[in-house]
Length: 476
Image 1 (cartoon, one colour):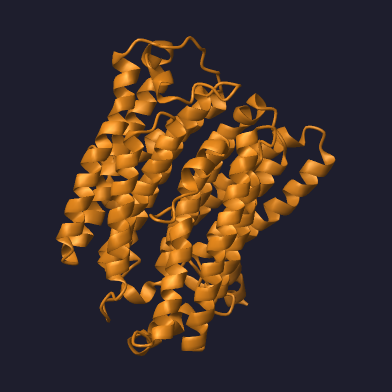
Image 2: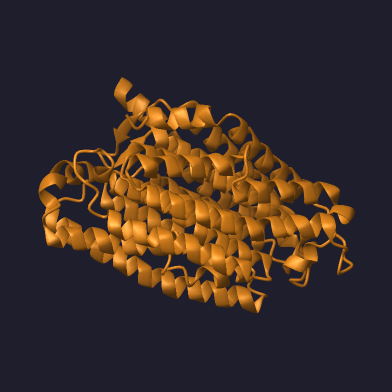
């Protein structure tokens, strides 16, 4: 009886979010002002799940007959997903009204996508990863085209769906080959048998196909072709979700699926593949971002480069690399949400003010937004003492410990290149005269969400040891 009660508490985050989805359906059907209720209801539920996950981070266990794990870094990921989604909910309240797309289904899809992310982060079985991936992806396809009155939104949804379905095929085929060679889908059993399986070409091919499928989800080169168009066509708040929650969920799935690479028992045989796509992603994202004139496309290519930094942690093949990835995801999520949040506030009702030059003289129009945007750009550029700097620092240290110093050097070079297009926005805001006359829409909830995000990455930057220490303690 005690075990059953404890198991109930351990899966409480899943139960709360699952129940909230069902309640949200009834709210949407039976409340006249259901959309307004759902926006705050969703934000509160996400906040409850995030804070509970953080408070129960030490409740480590395996449930559902060995298919799902709780506590530890799984709950840290839960916090990232849910707290990030709470911020998205606050940002979307006034943003959806701006485009006449203020429908309750948005928040139901948002909750469903986060539930899929949580399945992926805690998976102990390949089928659980696939289940979470599909729950998240189907929700994302609908969210990409949610603003159906915009032609670009419809285009982005179709592109995302077609390329996403194609990438899912790689994942499924990879899982089939892994199962065919190992006779199991349990990640623990696969890890235990890895010393033998690493000589099986069928198993190696399966893992590579699995990695290729997820390279699409994390927007790594050369599987990044969908990112700029989808981010530009989607609502700004949805693009923020794709670049943060979606990326964090995909990396969490890779980490749990490739756990056998990080225990130090065997050599990282996938290091060449991971190192190559890390280099290509960093350099391609950083260089192409320089040429962008649309801020959402610039942030899209920035997302590709940031995926490359995190892949360095995978190539390192050690616990330091995993800890660095999780810390980086924490820092990157709230930094990028702040950036996309400000974009959503500055964006006009006719899809205007999205050009980078639109930010010229923003400091005179809205000093607070300009200051918050500058802090977000500093963190993304990796300037200390913000969280973005320590995210890259821990990743590069992991690479050096794995004798991949050359990869860390390439990462530093990419970071130096990226400083240009991040600080260009700061220069425009503070040292250029406004080119266009427009007024920034007032949104108290949106501004609150941005301020919370900024405070989070500043606090983590000031006290990085507390978070990295917690993450590392669960990897031992």
